[in-house]
Length: 377
Ligand SMILES: *Cc1c(COP(=O)(O)O)cnc(C)c1O
Image (cartoon, rainbow, N blue to C red):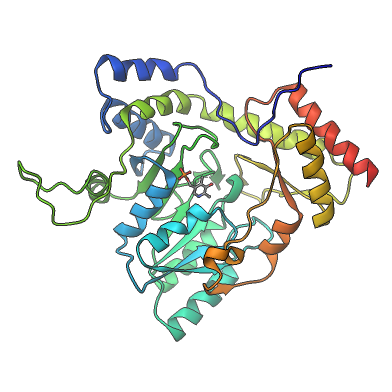
């Protein structure tokens, strides 16, 4: 009887070199936020993202989104358009500022925000209330959103766009890195993401002076006086120098991580190709997904659940696709512009274990389990 390990959806995958950077932090006693690893990690990210953007390393992806909205002066009474098909952290920061999310459904090509519905939503809100203060679009599960179309609409209505690229580091859109596709981008380095700092995030902006303001706000908005003068409300959102050390080790292997996740995706897709009722999201021409999470679409809720429960019995973690935010109890009173796409994906879709440290044995164990369920069906 083999002793079965638990297989998780997307566990951390350490390189080993992280510890050198952490040792530097300890040896120099830079345990506080800020410090050489933070600056180093920002420079590494900047270079990786093409060198034309400014990066602020923060303590989570959620706080990075919060700060992005704060920098756009979102406040009480404002509306912010947000993709409905996403993790709740994409929309929660809207409410931290007293603003209200308005949800827009997805399109089938990318599972991200539908450009057509976005336009409908904007026209409606401008006619019946006022111009939304910002738009949050997501590169869900690593798949880039339709950047040209969404950017064109955002510019037409002159509304700032925030790209929630928390799960999409390493993905590209016609060669451009996700996170850099609009005026503001957000990354996450949470433990489940493609690379991790244990907990962490980053805000990506276009201008040095916006970066400076973000750093100011993320370090308690301390005014220039020996006693700390405060003329705005700040936050304690800067990345720790110890955790940035983990990031410096991790970013060195980002390309390998993308390759491995893409290989996982291909393994699942090829292994299940004989079942024509099982589908996987294709990359539109010019889109490259880091395949952070491999998502499988079945043809029914019942089959999805059968597969999930059978995996669970074998200590294999899987998870339904995100429950659209317009269906979440916390957002039940929010306006939404729908076409049924995200609800259908939620009903039929399953996230499969996608870690870059899955062994061949793990992958075979997962696929054999899914096969068993599909053959019964
Ligand atoms: C992970 C994630 C976040 C939140 O990032 P944290 O670093 O965990 O706060 C936000 N949006 C999406 C789409 C995510 O996947």
